[in-house]
Length: 231
Image (cartoon, rainbow, N blue to C red; front, top):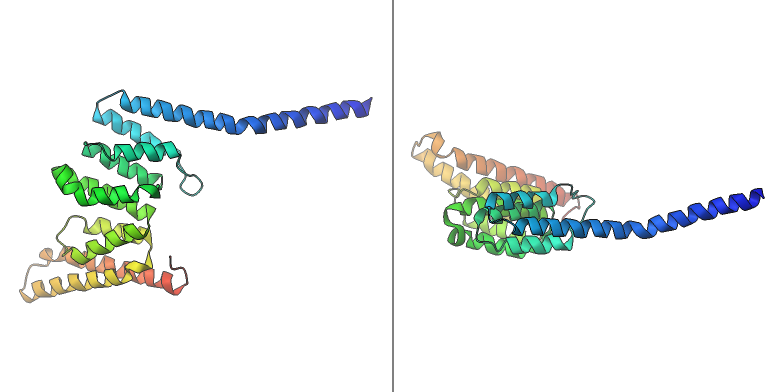
């Protein structure tokens, strides 16, 4: 009789385990679907840009970049928002793309970067800053090329210099060592010309900062490359 009771108990708990195991993915899927529907419904239910932006901010609320992968509906949703006319919404969508580490939208972001001044005019700086911030997280050859091209063309006068350098530091891509060295040399030449004219140091303080940052990042990337961790 004791053996029968033990057998019944083991069988019961085994069946319960199988039941829970079988239903956990379904429950998780249902939860994700519910989140998708409520998010999209809330976004579409208002024309208020501020409220829409609040909805977008919820997308990465509990996301862990080290363990999680963004759900496909979030990728599709953010891709649509990146096509919005409002720069405020596009800016937030770009940040959320970075927070969720969505690499699939790099091309859309790079296209937007190049069209930002034409499309968003007075708001283009904020949109481009968000895009640069995100590309530093998502990485890839396209992002590295954008950063390298920027360094080649910038003379230290553009507003994005610091953001580009910060993104390159986060990207940690040794292929940008040479562009960084060339950029630092370019800044040093500008400094030398202004010093030769006895210009007030305030006029070349930004160039000094860019040169120092570029050299520091290049040195760090060189150590990564020498350590056999080239990406």
